[in-house]
Length: 157
Image (tube, rainbow, N blue to C red; front, side, top):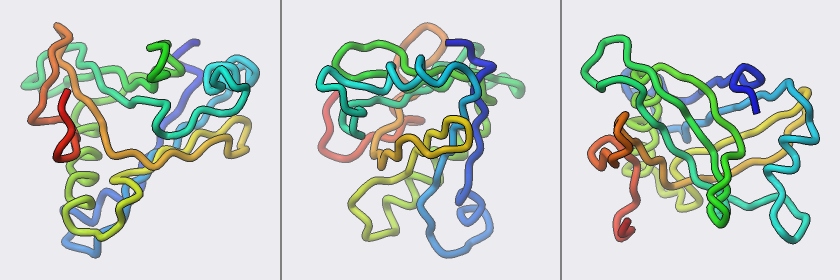
């Protein structure tokens, strides 16, 4: 699926730097390509939409992290098959700020449902909502950057 079919918008991340009340960070992904293709990718073997535990969210850097213009690819994959459901290009600073907000939210909020939320929309219609606890970050060589990833305590990778 083409990356330019997707747009990403985040909310509830400013409170970290502004000292406000904790709010669950949310990423909204809008898709404006062929809806059947995305629906198929989000559907499991039981013909139902995958749940949050059936998906993984990751960020692969395309350049060194210390590059001030570092970019990468945000992806959502099917946890069972490893198939990419969607991919889109984003600035590394924006993604890492989102992960920091999700980490702080998890530390400060009593909400055990997740540290952040992913909402996927097709043609303006909300298709799925995932409460997530993990967001993995990889360098351009494919090595996991644990210090930048969001990994709940007690999870072994």
